[in-house]
Image (cartoon, rainbow, N blue to C red; front, side):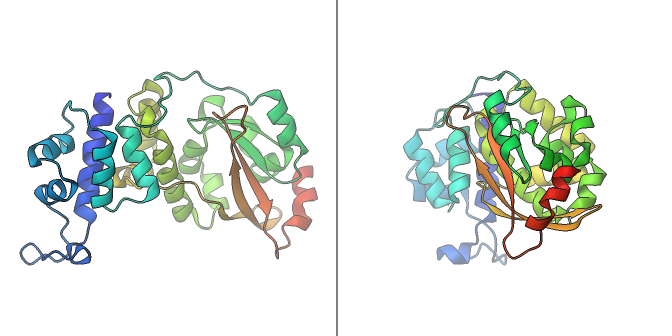
Length: 275
């Protein structure tokens, strides 16, 4: 396990331990504070590990935690499914990609043909959330996509640095929070790689909002949800966002914006495709 992953694992445990509400666990308050989290010794006791060992784990020391122990700690800290998976990935119990995964510059031809066959916006993203392919409807929705510098054609980078995209999202605060939490959930095993570190550093420098959300350490699995865009010509467009993983290219995700039923969005798709 890399030093950065050990440090992140320790900080993640400290944050989640501090967020627990003692009263909800049937524990008395500490002093006058009724929302203070668990003590380290309480977590260690409930997880059936030594206080010293758990302290070292939170301190990011070079120790090896078994999957069974991390599962026990996850139960004590009442982690969500996404948070549990993130913790296990940090501990090395998930498929770990190569530290320096080759950059994916373009979606394979057969996946690009699939994107092109759709009459609603769709695009492909790499593990680092670089946008590697898109169709005409997506270009109609987000017109700058083709002119963006390939080095900055990253979904997370654009959501935090492109004022045009921010203006299109009436729920930008909620959307950006979801994106950061989902990205963290998927990035646990890649922490410590040069590419990942560079991206997070650039984003943190470019966007105080990103820096704060990243520091909050929210973790979420992707969930299909409604997305609303304010198109400069067509007005409000309402979609259902879905994501598929091709079985023959699992390193890529296909993100699709299907027109939401009961809205006029579907009738506007020809105009969107036409640009």
